[in-house]
Length: 381
Image 1 (tube, rainbow, N blue to C red):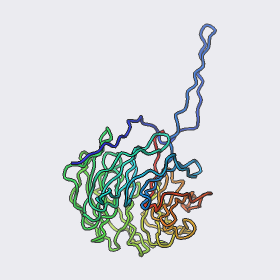
Image 2 (image 1 turned 90 degrees about the horizontal axis):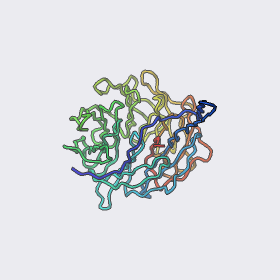
Image 3 (image 1 turned 90 degrees about the vertical axis):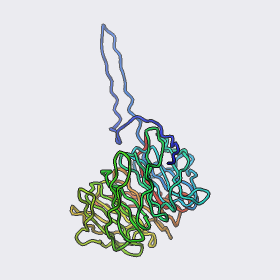
Image 4 (image 1 turned 120 degrees about the vertical axis):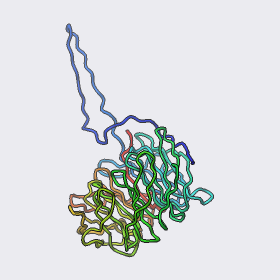
């Protein structure tokens, strides 16, 4: 078993959204005297956007204002390591992790503590994983981290203690078919899904809530080779971006045991072949990054899980060969952010009531070189 301290501060809990500034004056009179007490509203938690930059081997961090506009935090980008491929932020907004390699070429996860209020990162070091890690995801309570190791065909699982210690659990890593590329967590935290490049299957694992251990995988065929998987916030549907060059997205119903059943009329036509997909937090929209055609496709989700192309999807992500690699949507489903690998920048969009994307003024903004993944989070105030 391996462990490193991730130096997460113990922070008080707070609501994700605050009311408008409220000043309360309490005046009491006693024998002709009076006093006034004014309460200070709590600080607003920052909305943060992160990119993992492969070519410059670092992580960029931005704050997003109420209009969705981005500003780089002080000191950004922050050094990580070579071969960065994926990024994830824990649910409490205190820790961000990226997959990559260490200086010897072995697989590694780099961790960063997120400073309250500012979003500034402080390195917490790295920890070894399997060979060629390409995907990672936290469970909903932030007590476990799961890493897909493509070349070693397994999944490494770490526990995250109250003190912030990351430790590989007993019996980790767990077998994961031939070539696990992508991971997706069920909102209940009971199930983990992995896309296997070698077999073209989606693998389902049960998760022990107390230990993080994975059950033996149940296999569900996906004839189109899933390269990215996303789960609806309701937990009722799963979607898989089919192999690059195939402009389809496969959809599945999820039963109470996590099992997958293909939806009627699946796979669904997409305006673009996707390298990655994401769902917005409202569960109404799917966004698919098309690396080859420099755009993002948008699709709506109906009550039965079926996908329909938006009009006028797809949406360009900038000028030139942008090669978008990843899409993330903020917690309120108001803004979408796209990592443009080809132009080394981050495109920002507002999301209208139909899910369509509209580029923000001053978008895109510069990121590190070769951003391969993007994530959003609400930080600590």
